[in-house]
Length: 85
Image (cartoon, rainbow, N blue to C red):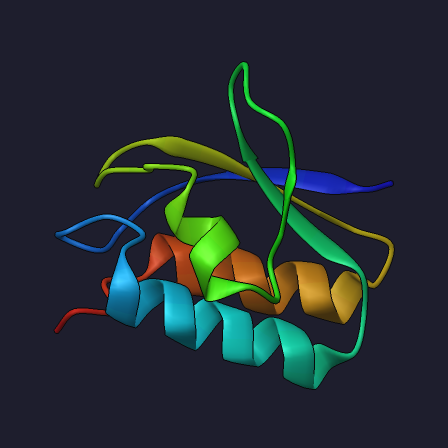
């Protein structure tokens, strides 16, 4: 499965608001997408609660994985963007 590692851009990390935005985009994409941090298990990007369990703070490296190139690009861009602004 293709992956891309990106740096979390949101000032509060991947918590409630950013996680909800990412999860909504993942569900809309209709593809299997996972997020993971080094040493952690991949979680379903379509679940805001699962995203929050990553405890990914601003500046953390998150690996996005999906067989769908468009979904991989979309979710990677969202993780890297400051979604709290």
